[in-house]
Length: 184
Image 1 (tube, helix red, strand yellow):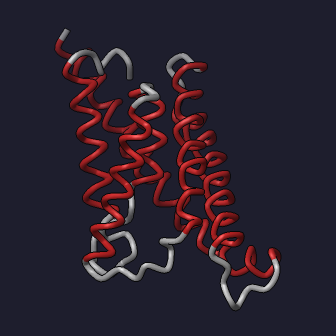
Image 2 (cartoon, rainbow, N blue to C red):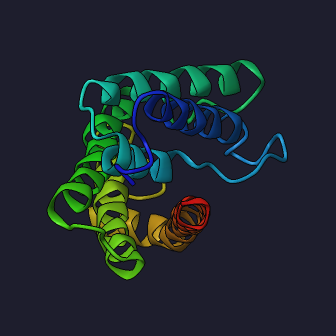
Image 3 (cartoon, helix red, strand yellow):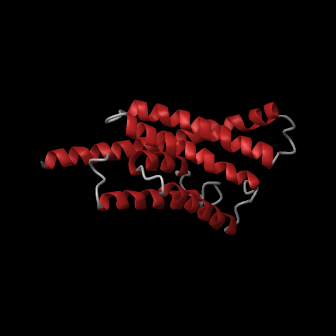
C-alpha cells in the first residue's frame, strides 16, 4: 500500500479511515440502525498503512468522541466506566499488529494479513473484556470463568465484522493497484 499512499494520499486515507470510524461507531450498539462498527478494522488498517504512531492517539480520541456522541443520542452508558481505559491497550494491539504486518512482510498477502488481524482481534477482545471484568463487574458473572462464558459468544461477531472491513479494504487496494498498472 505504501506505493499508493504518498503525499496527499496519506492524508486522504487517514480521512477515509476516520470517516469510516465516525460513521459506524456512533450506531455500533444497534440503536441507530447503522452499519457495524469499523473501529477494530480502522485501528488495524491505520497501523498497517498509515504507520505513523502519533496518529494512534488521534484515532483513539475520535473513537471516544464518537462514543460520547452515541451516549448523548441515547446509547446506554453501561460500557463507559473506568474499564474504558483498557481500550487503549486493546486498540493498541490492533494498531501494533497492523504495523508489524505492514513493516515485516513485503507485499503481505491477504491470508497473512487476515490471520494477523484475527490474532490481534482476539487479543483486543480479551484485553477489553478483562478491563470490564475487573473495573466494571457484571452482577451476574461472579467468577472470571462465568464472565468469559457470558461474553465469549460476542467474539465471532466482532471478528467477522473486522474481517469483512479489512477484506473490503484489501479488495479496494487491489483494485487501485490494478487501475494504476493498467494506466501505465
